[in-house]
Image (tube, rainbow, N blue to C red; front, side, top):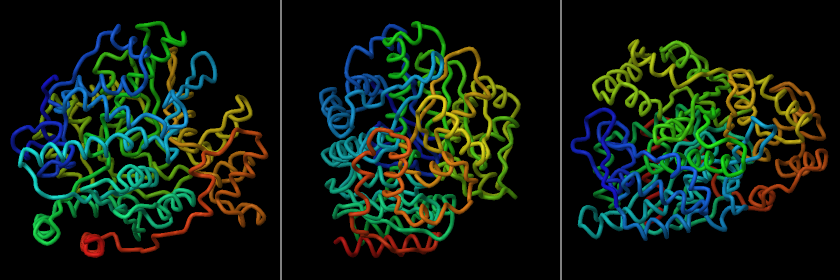
Length: 516
């Protein structure tokens, strides 16, 4: 077992901690995020050889290299459980090639049909194993409440992963009216005795800010420990245990492209990722640091283009920026949590700079990085944003040309990839099955403008009924079972709360009291 410790990006959490502690803590004390002290390096041969073993074994090799302080055999067992029959293909995340240089990494073959399954089928297992180890050491004697803010996909994936896991309860908050009908039903129908879901009056940033403030409330944390014997933790990508599984699929994908003869070993590829919270593209950056021949990272934004503007200017500014509801709701984010980790790495791991910028963002709602950090950012990243109209048009264009149907998030990435691509092959991260966003996929296929009313006979359909209509019109393969049967599932969660810290804390108290 390789030793590695994890330190926080703001330098306020004290001594570095092992992987198990970083995972159960989620967020570092003082608000920073955990990062590994050492990034492992794989040789090209070691990367290419990953394709010779099943995906679970690839994941285990990467985890062991990052210094997970669990026995190797435990890591192997947990990965076999994380990546098995719960996915609808043995390939776990297959690659579909639209032409010789355009490859789509399908990250949506898990139980909730979104890329979050790649991490959230894994994290709960490692969370439980980590908590068990810490209890055996006498380091903790409490259970956990996982509190999650979601823009759509993380919530269901986290609920699915943590449902009925011992020693853990989970509460999910999503923006009321800010997720698709299918996403809403996936969360509101979730089974399990240890789960709770709240709609929040506001947008995703309101949810995320409220949750972060709840985590930072020391008095509330003491109350939870005293009254409920519970500590808060996170399943959002602020948790390193959420991010590391995403690193795996970028390293793995390069090996697969080589094995399939689509890329010569050692030749570079570009990677294009649709992202609002920056975690998915940060994972590709870590894969590059490990030795994966990734040249350029293409950051795809929708009309909430704060990341595109930052990458192109070095200034992060949300002072007077409107929050836009788009056809790609999981990217409707203005405050990008994982950018903090990226900047920490690009500054040469300078916690004072990160703390200063994050304080500026919290206080002034803007910050600007120094010229050296900006130059390093530009060396790795390029970015562009896609209008809602172009997003829907891309869905139709790709279907007409390739008989392949993109969800709106992947459509944003596809369009940015076409604008910014070099001569390198490009790997496009496809983050969700199209059936999670049926109304906007239908708009795209039929040339209906974003926000324009659907025809009455279509608007009256449920999400599942509309998806069946799209399948009939396009003669596409089946809809995943987890999405096809949502109309029959009873709605369990209908509560709506305010986005403020006090409201979230009151709702949390009520949930824990009911479950005691």
